[in-house]
Image 1 (spheres, rainbow, N blue to C red):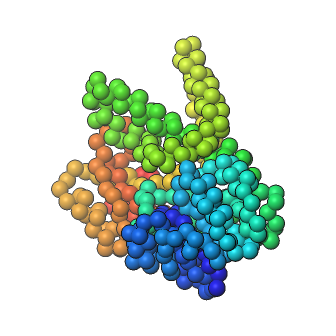
Image 2 (cartoon, rainbow, N blue to C red):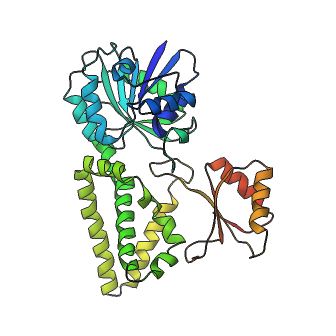
Image 3 (cartoon, rainbow, N blue to C red):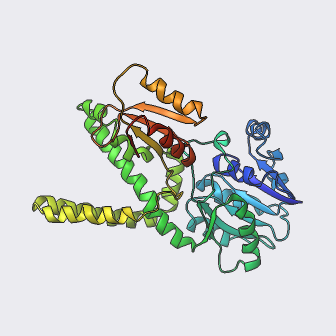
Length: 362
């Protein structure tokens, strides 16, 4: 029996547990320092066994997944050093920065155990074990960052196990990972937060900013609602990369300042054209480090019963509608109703069902 210990059975750890649970020869142990959390794991049948003892979870494990905040990873690695880990045990994590944890692991003596950094590039707007799903990682990139000291046989064992998630396994150097994810995730989060805070400052003088920002502005800045504590740890762990990226971003903004100062219409048009061209090449249906939106915009007349009619069409076909919103500020939004779904199949089915009745926009 292969024992898999998961420390932190929330969204990420719980989804891993559900990918592994019930597979022949696998036994899943979930750990939390809180008995209430352990009870929740067991009640929801996410794991086979739960414990508040790190030693009990770790010793005898063939695989250990650290699904705790980035800022706590080194603490957990140090604690694992105190246990009699099974020879050949593979320790991995799911943090969104890899350089700092790789350095921490390299400073420790693992004897017959091995550390391989990991980052499944998938997520959800929800959090906690309640949001865990066996489909979370399906078709997503799952990055592994083994050091040069890790034998191919060891790496192969972890890769084989992770194929149960149906993710696409990608092998990347830890520092290269942080460069790329810093650019496509960490920098956009900072920009969104700074932009929202800038508008919040204006709103203190005139509340109309808040009223009119309900449409497209709210959509493009949604990642500013991310968990503050988690992002504190991520940005501090990847601060050198982020500082360099912010300097590059400053240069891009300076370029726009110059174009506006000198009324360079051609330069502005070229900037938008090149951005549009690059963005059009990005995969539309690939899970990435930023959570995908599964929204459909519907143009409807302002008649009584319209929302009920739409809900009935979807409900009769068992399409799960997670949210519905009436859009008042439509400057950058192509419909009066925003329908939100939890996954691509529900979104696709909704479009198919609603198109004969209403104009649909994606």
